[in-house]
Amino acid sequence: MRILYIDHYAGSPTLGMEYRPHAMAERWMRSGHTVTLLAGSFSHLRAENPDVRIDGEHRSIDGVDFRFILTRSYGGNGIARVLSMGDFVGKGWLQARRISTALRPDVVVASSTYPFDTWLAQRIARFSGAGLVHEVHDLWPLTPMELGGYSPRHPLMWLMARAERSAYAESDVVVSILPNIEPHVRSLGVGTPVVHVPNGIEASSGDQPAPEDLTALVATLHAEGRTVIGYAGGMSTSNALDDFIVAMGLLRDEPISAVLIGDGMLRPELEKLAVTNGAAVHFVGRIPKRSVGAILRHMDGLYIGSKRSPLYEFGVSANKIFDYLLTGVPIVNAFATAHSPLKFAQCSLDATAEDPGDIARALRKIAVMQPEEAAERGRRGVEYVLAHHSMDALADDMLRALEQAADAQRHAAG
Image (cartoon, rainbow, N blue to C red; front, side, top):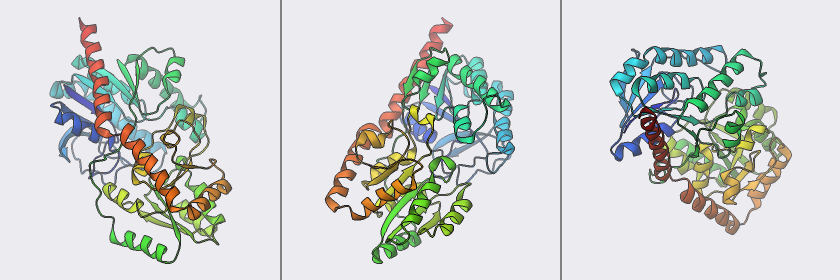
């Protein structure tokens, strides 16, 4: 098959996240399929953005073909980010016939987190006679409404709701990273098949050594007799690092330190919060993805959390969950959901979301945990993630969904 995978924010091991489209594409190409990733020239998620000068510019990056649409840069979640979405969808819509003619896809996947890209994907699929798949990362507009406090009457939320329903109704198959969205899709009066293909792990990719200064920091903290708690990922509201830092402040007189790997728009505020609370927290910035596992394995425990939200009734599939499970290190789980691989694996120390006192309690438990218990929790996590979240198996599952969509379109065409 010829597959066009549309994701405004698509990255690669070199560019940085989002990694999923590239990881899927690599595996499909090994099976003889032709894959092109259609992405924006700028993404806030990438560690490095390509120097793209021309709309539709083609690049081969880390072994996968990309086609880039010029999109403006932005910071934060303001109007500039919305305009960047408009750049991607609007320019792509205008280029749809040219893209269709050049690539002749058998199936088109819309996967940009926000739902507006369905209109671009629908247009390309229509010109190509291709099957159409909509891939759900998060439920929009529910996500910005719940986490950002927007009213459903806000014009942007209204437009997102129209795009969301169109995406579900016009697609041949809906693929969801979240485990429990089918009731939501059906509540909108849509009967399109829904397939769950969660995020996964690159179990065979191999770790790269962590930066020497970071390894030295963790070694120094251990030499001082301190328990070291790690975090790797973005620094946004949804990750609830503010609650974690307040919890660390409650432990300021105890030999427990935290090392936060990653970056994000809230980092300056979180650094100030750590100082205000006297928390022993070290911010070390981004490191290469393939070095993350190597350094996390040196930690005594790991933290992951969220804010409380009805959104989590649909489940979670954050990439860091699987990276964490693969380390074999005990995990403090302050996610506000029962639909989580951490719960399914029965390996985490659970804490109440948005409750720094309870998070501090779980961190103390890590500090006094016997090696045998730590090893057993770690073993359960590793076994679960290898059994259920291997990227090779997930790519096969996703490919079957794409084949289902392509077949549906062929049958519709007679």
